[in-house]
Structures are given as structure tokens and as C-alpha cells.
Length: 282
Ligand code: PAF
Image (cartoon, rainbow, N blue to C red; front, side, top):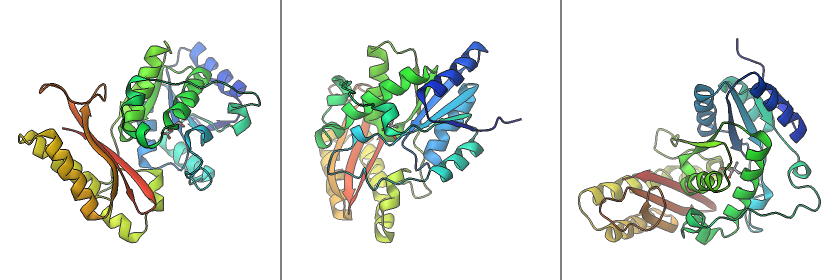
């Protein structure tokens, strides 16, 4: 019989419950989120349920990963809706802390990575983003001390960054990548899709179509630079304002050097007031 979903808001209660499960020999999986959950998050939970005995979801809108001009104040929030979805998806524990619990007065540490966090992709346009993400994710990893942590491929650079961080800091939590969940149109699910108006919702799937067209161009022998420039022009013609459209080494995010390098195409572009991201393997 499925266990009832339990909610805690203190680090002490989170640790108490996870330790109790560990003492029973149960494997645990962490799903860090900022709430406003959709099928993409639920897929992280479901994969966690398949891999571990207990799944712990965190809901915390981390102020440190938003720049002053970004959407912290308006970021979608729906705690009751989130809890209902999590119960149905089979999560066991939800950690919903207040800001003070995570960043008490006097908090003064920042976890900063080089390597994939300075690949010149998201970091070029959101210079404070990864410092905020790695600081909160390192804290969540330490608080929850889970065997696994589930991260979506949708935020591919973030996935590479937290994987590198866990490795560099010897955090005994294995980061598990989970494939992007898409709508029927191919649009990658994102909490920020809620900002798109009707017209933009029709244009948004062109981002994924453009990634596939570029991947096919590269596979057919077109030079990488030519394919990515062509793709960026296609996005602009469709009404996007692209920040980048890049082909990178799929494991390191470094520029492609050798023909045998595994390639990941990554893009971010504005559609009206909404910034969309997507990526696919070639
Ligand atoms: O991907 C997100 O939702 C956030 O960046 C994360 C990993 C929960 C950290 O706040």
C-alpha cells in the first residue's frame, strides 16, 4: 500500500526521517525543485521511485539563483497543487522550508564552480545563476544525505554542474539524469511556460524543431558553425530573440574539437518576456 505523503519544514525533521529510513536499510532519492510542478518534475519522482525505496522532494524557490531583474517575485507558486501531484506520483516526504531555514542571518558561504559552470552558455547571460544553484544544491545534498538525486536534462548545463560539484566535493549522492518531458508539440515542459500567451505557445515548439533540424544538418555533414548559425537565424525568423545556439561536447560542455566528440546542441532564447531553454543530443 502506498505510504501517505508527509511534509516537513525544518532541517531537523528532514534529517530525522531520512536517518530513520537509512537505519532500516532503505535507499533514498532526492528531487530538488522550486515548486510549480509539472509532468517533468513528476517524471523525476517516478524515476526516483523506481530506483529507491523512499523519494524526498524539496520545494524551495531559491532567491540566490535569481538576479535582481529576474522573476523571483512572480515565479509561479502552488503548494497545495504541488502536494496533490506529489502524493499521486508516489513521493514519500516533502521538505518545504522557509527562507530563514536555508539562509539564516549571517549565512556567508557561496559554492562556486569552474568547468561546466563557466562554459559560456547560461553563465554568460545569468552570471550569478550557478553560484546560487550550487550553493543551495550542496546544502540540500548535505541536509538530506540521499543515495541519489534526480535532475532533468532540460537544464543540461545545471545537470553537468551539479554532477561535477558532487564529484569534486566528494558528496556521496549519485546524480541521476532524467530525460526531458515534452508536450505533444515537442515543447520541453517548464514552469515558466505558464508565462506564454496563446500566440507564443504556437511559436514555442519551433525551438525544438530547430534543434532537430540542426542535428540533422550536422549528421548530414554540414559544418557545425554553419548549422548553428543557420539555426539561430531560423529562431530569429520565427520570432525568438536567441541568447545562444551552440554545439558542445556532451560531457564537458567544451567547444567541439574532434570529429568523434559526442555533441549536445543547446539553446536559450526569449519569446516575448519568457526565456526558453532546450537541448538535444546529435
Ligand atoms: O532546477 C531547479 O528547479 C532549481 O535550479 C533547483 C535545482 C531546484 C535549485 O534551486
